[in-house]
Amino acid sequence: MTRATLRGFMVSTKPNLTDIAKQIGAWLDNSGKTPALYISRVTQDALELLKEYGSDIRLCLHEGPESAVQDMIVIQHWQPVRQPHMHPGKNEALHILEGKLELFQFDGHGKPETIISLTPDDFFWQIPSGVYHAGLPLTPVVVFRETRAGPMEPSIFAEWEAKWF
Image (tube, rainbow, N blue to C red; front, side, top):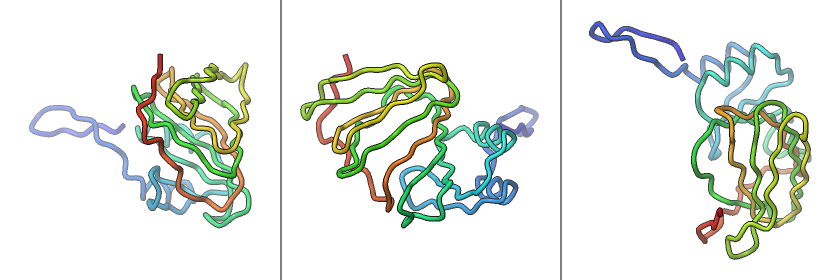
């Protein structure tokens, strides 16, 4: 966050994502639920800048939404609830790079069938096609690589309320 003075008070302002995209050599796509930056090279400086942005974001390493493989680095910030979703016909692989993520896989009625904590030390998990799942960051920020078959299609969100515990 950057700081600005407003009537003598210091306030935090959110960086402009369009400006960040230009700064790191990416193009911005705001058409999905989460903003996506298409980029061919991700540096640690770019990651730090995007973590400071303060909202969830995807760094897409593939050429575009129609690519056969969707390869992304996802930056998620802590929030208390994430809506369970699934990807019909597509497995999803997660590789944790930073932080800690609790991953829930649900049955068709919202009851967790699998709960696993992922960290950079215990870092890889494959989510089968058609399984409702949700990740809950246990640290202020989680950075992970997500890979699945393309083309990019909207997630199917659960109509039921998850029974987390």
